[in-house]
Length: 209
Image (tube, rainbow, N blue to C red; front, side, top):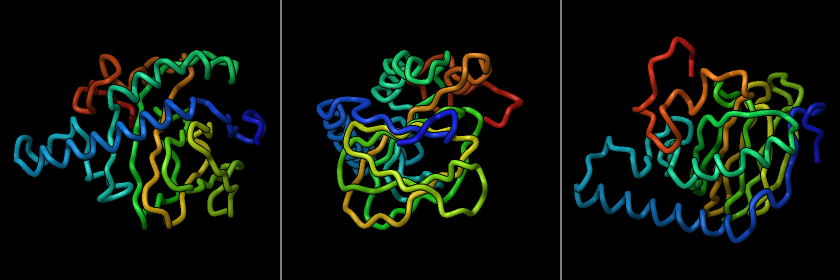
């Protein structure tokens, strides 16, 4: 489905194995439980997000994690594969993952500069389509994309609107992998010294990253 250069998106079936997808899905659930216990037992304060957060403005009250170490490692390990698929040299910026819950909505949006080339990878749970408008125009109906565990949708995140309608299932795990072309070196690692670090480690920049 899709031609990346023509349509600004492409679906890669079995981008990662179902076994790896299931491992990462289970890993996210365990980490969410760890975070909940650490907060409940007051071992860490609510504003510490090294174990994840429920304070993501884009999808409030849903567990998410910026640049979890395992997910950033996936970003790193799949870069060469993505370069071959896209026939372009890339740099890694960051990963982001969520466990969506019933009723969640992902509003229509375009991404910031660190998301020049993005992928959403289905890790498991109930089916939940993602929509995007390949033309880059605002307000159009868009294209529906359904992914199975291990499948990935690659899209030009800064160019095309993408969104999800209200989720009717119980849970859905997704990881987003973000890259830039290698001439955007200022966005390398999303302005951090290296992958795996929290957002607090970003260097000062004049760009809106």
